[in-house]
Image 1 (cartoon, rainbow, N blue to C red):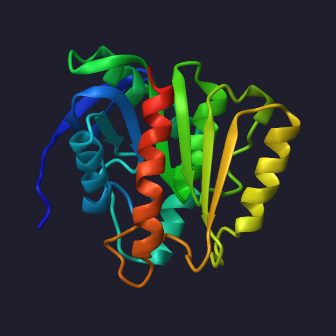
Image 2: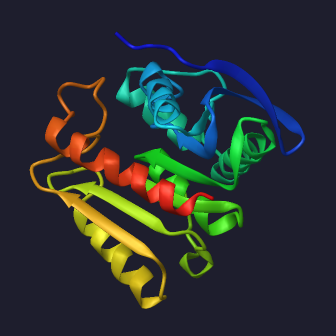
Length: 225
């Protein structure tokens, strides 16, 4: 059974207020949702980061809407204003840095699918991002200016992912290497899309998920200072 560690909070972003789920103390991490919304699985990831010594928040980018329907999730994704979402993620990061529990001057971003693409986007836009992790991230609404990437980026894919192919990660790695950026690519054989989501038994790959988690923690531990 999940042990709930955190609380719902409100923070400012771009002259309006946003909600999110907050837990922990330590270096700052923003957890960016999949297209299902701010669901219990995403909150549980905030709790997991908190248990590992981080101060984490998941901003509610769909403003209260959640779904279990892929069709409805797709509609919510299409309606998402990527620039507004980017500002809300940055606002969540700034909120963490303002908290007394925070021990870092930069914040990390980690996202999944839609959130993985947004993690890359934020890392090209915000100077205070110290590190970024993108799990199987990619959708066309986010135009990346890769030359502006400042933070070390970890790209994570499943070799069997039919939604966001691992080859797209290999192409991104090649592009970033050509620009001299700090990029790490991890591709897991036998894993498909959403392999880290333990709330979806049909997608979850336990071996891959257990292997990648300490690598993610190490990435943030090294770079979010």
